[in-house]
Amino acid sequence: MKLNIQNETSRLRAVVLGIADSCGPEPKVEDCYDPKSVQHVLAGTYPKEEDMILEMEAVAKVLKKYDVTVYRPDVLKNCNQIFSRDIAFVIEDKVFKANILPDRDKEIEAIRYVWNKIENKNRIILPEECHVEGGDVMPWNDYIFIGTYTGDNYPDIITARTNIQAVNAIKDIFPHKKVKAFELRKSNTNPKENALHLDCCFQPIGKDKAIIHKNGFLIESEYEWLINFFGKENVFEITKDEMYDMNSNIFSISEEVIISERNFTRLNSWLRLQGFIVEKVPYAEIGKQEGLLRCTTMPLIRD
Image (cartoon, one colour):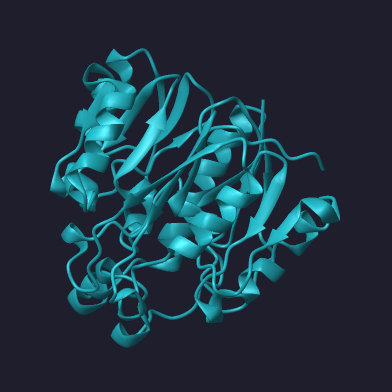
């Protein structure tokens, strides 16, 4: 398989879509990886497997409508395999195995059959000290945007997923790219003050547009850089509540077609006004785990 990912929006040809089958019992509070899941466990509103299966099938149906080749992980019993972007990501013709929370390593084995289709020299496993997850990594033509957290308390922040060592390693692998890191706001306890990944507060769409939540960025000048880069008139700014609902975590099939959650009324109206075709799906149950459409898809090939 010849991988090709230059950006977030070129016409999609092949993707790994996560799977919700046999995702295991509701986690205990102490086993949750993010504050939003904790909130739903405590409230008794944690998503049910059967609802999440239906939501993911709705996305699979849209992808197939656009003739995208869809790979699904092999089902591991009692294992949450919904967020395929967490375990691997592609830049250009290289696939990276994410260095993630140790007990999620088995998830990569469930897509081994895809990994094995890729030339050995293009399978990248970073050194152990490099922590990185796909939700923080966004190729954008000449740039690679990366969300990170460099606070001294990094080891204590379970929501800090990508460190500066990983940013530097990616710089070394792609010396011809401009790698731009963004410091993200993190909270172990408050999901409205937590950008789990870069795609929880920012995403480029189309050719020159973006969705942004200002408070997701710890350093205002970095947020301002993005506003200037895309141009204020091309940016859709989302509120704290919209960030919490994951409005920036939609998914582009092409520069014209976007899959979005059906309840994102304000965003979807704006997208249509900008000329996008919006494929609406139900994804609110999956969103309760602090991830949405981009998190559950791992593109392999775009034009």
